[in-house]
Length: 363
Ligand code: B12
Ligand code: SF4
Ligand code: SF4
Image (cartoon, rainbow, N blue to C red; front, side, top):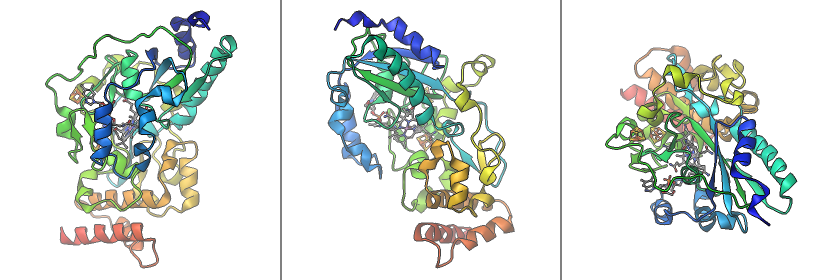
């Protein structure tokens, strides 16, 4: 079929009508960084995310994800404006991307709406919507489409928008004119702010060691967190934004505050439930430490936070509570930690509680 069924401009318009901040098209070519991808896995930098080591040839080549793929339509949602958080002591912080409605669901349903429209004029073509979970190097594809460039912290930075962006893609057999740059821009120059700010030294330029990254430790890692990371985790109980907060491309200005943020990211999910703050940025640690499965479900309904199981949230909140109690007195919070250290408590939670108590008594 001819490539004129849809033009790139028409496809971009369809995406923008769905409220995406940016849309562009990349060719569905194999990665130019296969060696780096393979080395990251070989060196174990994916940590306990075993799924990252699976389907490596597919991740390296979108043509294996969708047979006969020619183009990748790439979109961005802007989820935050980087306004500094004001988190009270005794509260556990949530990364900004996870404060609104589950982006996997919200972005995918809007991408599916685009796919449906595209199929009307190109019914013989394949359109596969991907948000995060498909084996696709989304940041590289977005950069190749011209939507920005990758910083030393490995995230996509759009000049003017910064990196508070989520990426979605439609891999398709439709041939569209690519919009991307000839040469990759370096957004960093001599800057090393994200590397210096990372509290666990997880970043080397253009690579993140997930075994050390607070985001992976709190959201992906289903085992006890090594004590050597506890202090560095500070008040983060789900994800981490420190490398992005440090980045000069994300400095909030009057202009960036007014830029498009999709409504699904603007309002917090379930404020007040399970001890959540009204602005959705944090949970009261005392509350989290008394959660049961029903409370977790209610607090995470419609949110991407449901990836963290109850035991993981208790573990994360225990570590944050221990960090708070290093410098503050709070007998109720200490009591909540003690209550989770009994023999009857499941091992990951109990062992974390005991290790936090030992640290507090030693300090
Ligand atoms: C696994 C994963 C993680 C892991 C590993 C992170 C990582 N850096 O790979 C963990 C759990 C740690 C994580 C954390 C976060 N993640 Co994440 N994650 C992913 C996922 C599912 C796969 C990423 C991947 O393929 N990693 C593999 C490694 C090898 O990738 P890489 O290191 O970038 O490898 C490339 C570089 O090495 C590069 N390279 C090597 N040398 C050089 C040199 C130069 C000059 C350049 C430019 C590149 C380069 O080539 C390699 C191949 O492309 C993607 C979704 C997706 N399907 O793409 C989301 C994704 C990357 N995550 C996202 C987000 C939002 C986050 C967090 C901000 C969440 C949070 N606040 O807690 C943090 C940020 C931490 C960080 N600094 O990376 C967004 C990023 C959006 C953006 N603006 O870029 C994505 C794209 C999800 C989405 N759909 O929007 N994530
Ligand atoms: S998300 Fe946090 S821990 Fe992970 S690389 Fe960035 S600053 Fe480091
Ligand atoms: S903080 Fe500096 S080095 Fe890190 S991504 Fe931003 S510009 Fe690049």
